[in-house]
Image (cartoon, rainbow, N blue to C red; front, side, top):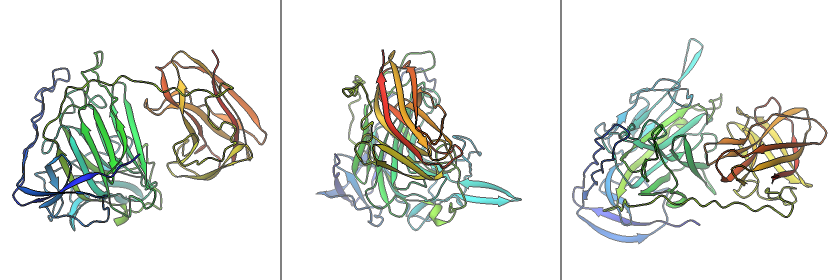
Length: 489
């Protein structure tokens, strides 16, 4: 279920003064957290309450008129109405190639790659060819030690670049990244990440833990895309709960996280998301997730991220006396034969694009199609992409109980000899493998494949069956039927 957001339109007739939030003084990573000073704003205004859907085509508002979520006040905003990036608000970052995630770009702190133009912040990745070598440069800016806020509504209206290999992001990191320890213990909040070759889907993600874990939701547009239209991305962050929004519609919520210092006990909940965070905007090029650019990737205006505004709001106060929710697993029941897989015999021609039961995915340059027909699913491949999982058939909600023994089986053949890699993975547990990626050789004859494994990790109600059919040396069409996951002890 999604809802329209209710907003106040505040006509601010006096100067708004937003007090910045102070940082924690203790940087040892093991001390008590110092409570941040609550940001306050003085506002002389006449407010009119209205209820409306978000208008994603609206022009940039002036600096003296800002839409404020109901129950909040404005802390800080940048409408980018000047002629250059205000470096009293923003820092330009500098990082070498491959600094994180095997990304290909170098971040250079120059207004050539992050600049203000026509009321927008433009982050422009650039391709450089010299002496037969190709390199990439991009921009990355943040508000660290200038606008760090604990709790609130964080919002940006923007357009993303379109092209293989681009990964634009609107996200947040702690003011003091060492307070609870290095990433991921310090925490990370990703508000917007849109792959440049899949511009209809946005990902909202929380990173945390030791070991690293993540919670992730996604939002797919019913029409249009994120590259050729402006859309508004936001989170509502309160003690013990974070909610993600696109164009005012909530699509994800989580309260489940933790952090700990190596060798120590977990820090009191809601750590690490109980400290001031700052905003980051950047466009990455290449890397583990988006894959490398190709000849079709544009490094002109279509390759730029354009940010209309960034705004931060807060409530007058927050109750930080919250407790970590007790995890309740919703374990799927098997059918009468003991099989946990739904539509295992492909008797139902279900929608393969929704999040129910079987889902067909095309990632990192993969292009193909899936069809359910005659009690089998047929996977055709036009381009097997850059990764083994670029063409993928999955089904989540597999109940995996710690200590349980399972059998994973299916029948398959290919129209030319080739490999495929099945697995059972953990989307909510940093993609660890309950049953590892296992190469199998497919021929032109139906074969039955059976695997047994023991679930050694903690119980999980969202294991995922995967058939990975991407970059494995062949585009041969694959047929699959009679998929089973059953407990055998």
